Length: 171
Image (cartoon, rainbow, N blue to C red; front, side, top):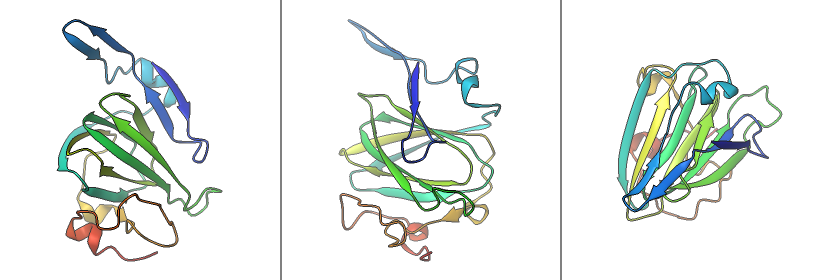
């Protein structure tokens, strides 16, 4: 496993698990508690998967308690992370990460950050581990995907959105 940190959001880690290839395909260990201890002392309690079609944008969501480890199992996604911690030097700054089934990159997102992803391939499978159990949308904050205060340069003008994301208030 190799890793580094975002140059814009230094608390956000980019992890590249080891991938083993042979004539049958590939093998990837996506989580090993011992290897990930380097990032701190937290425990994952829930795993989730979402599947989406091209141009679906899920997020931007977050809370002040949950660590998330996100990855793309199939297809290609554009992962975006935004610092929502008002006392932070990087408040409202974002970073964008291409994650896909070829680079196998994972993004470790600390509490206090919003995250979302845009499906770039015809179909995508997104996987994430969470350090807390999901308590519903009312326990999270939602940032509108095109909020001018954040000004994310999404490569699409009219993504497919949930009603929650479409109707999110501006900051």
